[in-house]
Length: 414
Image 1 (tube, rainbow, N blue to C red):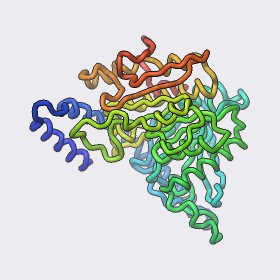
Image 2 (cartoon, rainbow, N blue to C red; image 1 turned 45 degrees about the horizontal axis):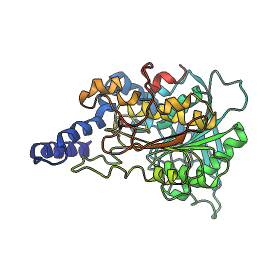
Image 3 (cartoon, rainbow, N blue to C red; image 1 turned 45 degrees about the vertical axis):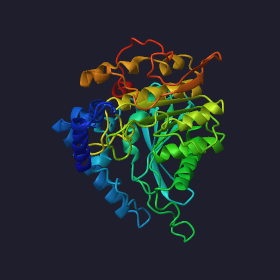
């Protein structure tokens, strides 16, 4: 919070002192203010905070009791194991009425107990094998609770979804089995190799448990790096979504949707225009390889659009809705071969979002970044290639969409 206030103060000084002909400091000031929208618009109700505290208290008692009665076999030790405060996640996603959620526990290759959940929408609970999606969290203690929103939306759309806490995060064990060869494996958790291995182990468990008809993987932050790596080496994977952002060092193999934001981990205002293609280097590699890809860069958004954390981590209001929309459409196209997904990926609705426009009319509700290009290059059903350098540009062939206002909260089957 202090860093954000200092950054805002610094930006105000830049606005006052900006010389003629410089980049647009006033536009940047308006843009940067979006990072406070989630807190100021959604998290201002005292009842909302009370529910966060209630959930966190119950989670704390539960995990302390679990570890104390495990005979020394369980120890979380992670910052977000208890689910208190920022670690609690969105209280609106806790008691999901849109389907069936099943807690699961399994051992990874290190012998650590990994906890997670399987999600199935109520319309699909008796449907037999479904297309599947495995969601991997970000690092630095990000718990699966922050990603329940995505699991619920995808489950409502006919996927069986798995979320899990990487070893050393959330409710999963900090350490592996007690033998000397495995005890320290996977620790500390903030390691790319560890994230890749835990994702592979999660896919293995999911395959044996759910028997998905096709498989998508989605990851955030270090999880985005891990899904980029795993898609290149695991033939079980059919499509990928990387939330901030695609790793451009790997070999493209399957269709990839990348998403990113104007600001990163510690949001700070821009003092000059950044390279407009610097967020799309992964997309460029996919395009050059002839593999379908799309990159969506969100205006006034941060690294935390995809991890719903109460109170502390800054984010815009509508970034999470755009993320749910594009993630679902991408998997519908490449896991279900749904012909309606093309128009949803090419919709122009996010160029003039009425909710965003109501909060800030300066950009007309356009959720695409004006700093960073949002390119796309994929094949429509039927084989025609559609491509453009920036979805924000009016020359990009998007499809007019006059449909109802979209909200991920309303798209969870409740």
